[in-house]
Length: 347
Image (cartoon, rainbow, N blue to C red; front, side, top):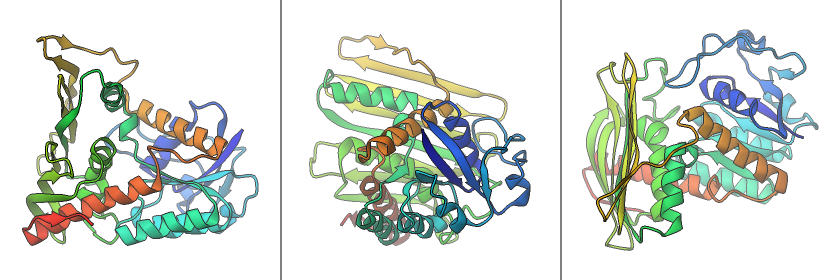
């Protein structure tokens, strides 16, 4: 039985807690939180843009730590699940690895490429696994799209458009702080940056145009360039100022012999889905049957991948620190492109 300690009980800590409850072979054995109310099990003030609201949680039988170093010193824990704000990630990751713990860290790994690389290098030098919580490839629709792409049934990948737009996240006061959360590119679009990197490889250059809010990019469109000039890949991401549509994401992925489409939009009154479809060259509309469309199931699949990696001692090809570094490299390049008004080559 793997024993994990969760560092930080906020929205993502709550979602991870719910996911762990569904995974055999791994057990939340400890939590660390400085909020005394939450450390006592009252998580009712937690909320996010999906999933159930927080509840009263029974923490009896768990080790409850107020100080992180005490949890890191707990010899019974196999790995630490870091669910703290992004500006704290590198410090916590490196301290955990130094203490001999493997680490699963929520995205983004850090706010800058240099910080990300420091975390990756430190864990590697310490002989500890580092997995980063880029959950999007495990969401049912995205996982199904990947399955069809990887099968080769529909030929070569030609490109795609990826969308992720939210209303103002008013419950996150530091969302637009470039030194704490990083704004929409780092906190929101990083999902698609990672997915684009996973599907197409690393872009060689990009051009972004968008709007700013203070020091960060608020909304932008991006065209990506690759070593293969036949790939046509773009994205749209950011914040709209209409609170009636809290969240939307989706994609249209082009292959030689098919187009794969999906989009979900959450509205104040209800959510609307354009279900996953494959449009083939014969004019057929194929509607794959998914076992689930619940976002929480994506986290269950993601943490199952984490548990398998931790149990076997082998890195994850999807949740690797190197891919997480590249995702931040892409997002930071998009930011520079908008702020400078120039095409950016990705180093």
